[in-house]
Picture (cartoon, helix red, strand yellow):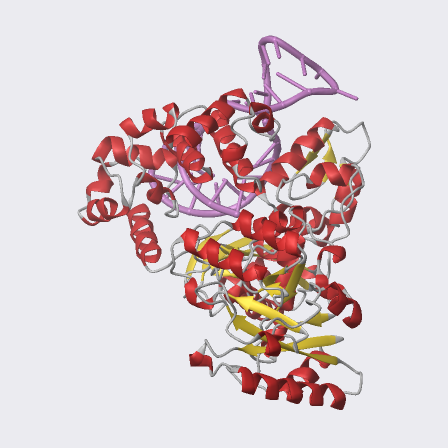
Length: 584
DNA sequence: GCCGTTTTCGGCCCGACTGTTTTCAGTCG
């Protein structure tokens, strides 16, 4: 639905429609995307649709049409004049709606291949405002677009940001480098890197030397733009990096501005205007300063700016225009969970199956990272390629884990656990007698990702009925960069987990991330207990916990929403209660 | 097309960079 609304917005823009009308379609797309309740259930009650900010009478009617017929009159109208493939042109650098419209009216170009052909044939040169430079830029953009999906996982992006920061910091007089943009907001994938640089070398009268330093970094592939205090370039992997060098006096305003999100900023600026201020990346300033009075109200830190607006400082993870501004005005933002709140990590593997460290090494590593307890949860036999444990080996493994637990002498608790596979009929692939000896039983649906959606739903629903299952392990098996829709009925499964007090797992490792921030919000609203774990296969994997926490924060989760913020004993107690006797 | 403690009309965030424009349009974040 969000995609169709966004598509309509883009086509309207190409059609040179009223920009504000375009924006309202775009806002509606964002609002729709943020809903945690399926829209299908809302269309019967128009009041609920109208209650969503940015959805008015016209848009509500559009949404009803979309749900009932799959399209809407405005979209059908536009599709008679244009093609949806034109939207791929908009993603090319330098191509905006006006240019796409021009290409279409002058040369009937409607997709990237046609554009490339026309550019190479020299047909673009006869268009107004099109010199050789533009054509070259376009061809380079096409080439890059073809070999690149455009988004990068947050952990990879964070690493690259660190590398670049180190190089920039070599210049004398540069003090701090802060990643802004979606990396700072903790989105699970980012499209580009925004780096904010400040220090004495960034003051206006001397900044050109520092700009020169950044613009000549060895890892630059293509220099895209270079201004007074801004440098944009791409790396060889095509990731775009925007670096801004700003004086310390306006650093807070800049950080606030470049952190976004776009909608958060737009709303914040609207609120600023209502209060008689104007907000830019340089400062929050009074609109009409009196004679002899300075116009700047706040600029050096984000805290000052939000405070001057009568708000709490808003954590970057919440800046997505989903109610955070109003909560901040009311001084009622939640106390979000932090990495320090996490006491245990209860999903990890050892050399017994596909991990690379021993039980003892994992325990020592976790201790070093400040954890109070872990659970060793190696694979069960159905995952043969990981050398999964059968019942006999699993029981031996329990003894080995208990031995390490004793060796650690209470410095850290080591629980015995297992990651069992959920079989076709929904049963687990180890005997109840074995599972009954485990502290933590995680059930995962490893082998069923290719099944039709309803079969997956059925299988998961049957699995959570098993009284020995504590945690539904990476429930979607979803990969961050694949934007496929969820294959099964998430609502149904999460609801059942909540009823049976089965916890759902959020896998902290971005490579295996399970629940998006939206589904985490849904899980919370349905009353699910959530467990965040790293699924560590090595010691380094344990450090991915911070990325998991970021997603939890984006979902507005507090300490109380997450099981493994509890101390060891309380954690075990909070798991689904065992059956009183082992089933035959 | 949305919105309203300046409400049913007339607003709607703000600034930088590029290329080709001789004064600015288009794009971007």
